[in-house]
Image 1: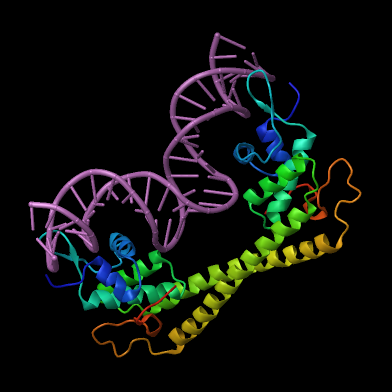
Image 2: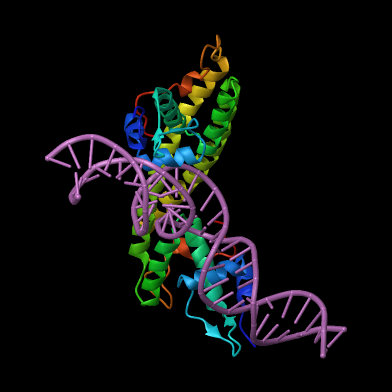
Length: 141
Length: 141
DNA sequence: CTTGACCTTGGAGTCGACTCCAAGGTCTAC
DNA sequence: GTAGACCTTGGAGTCGACTCCAAGGTCAAG
């Protein structure tokens, strides 16, 4: 029986057998050969493909985007333009997320500083609630 | 029947009735009075509490952390110190996430720039794969 | 008395990328 | 021939904060 089994293929790219099967289910890997007994058998091209997938993931692409690129590639077309598009799309998403988190962090910094230097809710009256958490009319998180 | 029903309470803080019920389930809201027919009935303190929850969320705290703070508060203790701790904890998480995303974005920028100026995979040989996605030995995304 | 707008509950679905499971089949070494 | 390490499948669980659902109950207005 020649060809790599799931965990062997996985080992070649540093992923688990489960992950290989998962990618297979999503159609990211080339159509599998199967042994008589139903084992998936992969070749060197599959190793390259799997590494390529991991590389694309490391660049921040989503599996759904990678799947698209693979379809283009398997259709014999050049995926270069599409790849740049996919990366730009992700870049915009990531940028938005960074902006959101950065604003949050700055708010937190201010609140932490206030909380550390402030005299807490002292004198504690009815309800002791830290200043930064005092109810405001309508809050959109 | 006096007291606010779920959607009325929600409206007072800009959240949906579903969200109010969800917070109730998580134990974030004070124990509810119920009408004879089983309707939740809230008072002004609940409005303040709900706004407080939204405020805490807007500061980046998780509902699980907020729940903890509420327990302290309901136990009659001052939650100030705990609040600063919770915020610091989140700050660290958010910081790590920003760092991760920033590195990703920088990588993407470089790859996009290379992809736009480069001559793609021209000349397209066997397998046309954009440079940035060329398989590398082992990739941890 | 009916319509329609609310309320109740428990539970499932969403997003993404896995991870883990059970029940069964296969392969290799001793 | 049997142990133990693999493989197969479909499906469920994870994280977080909701959102939506169905099936049924309640309430005020016309």
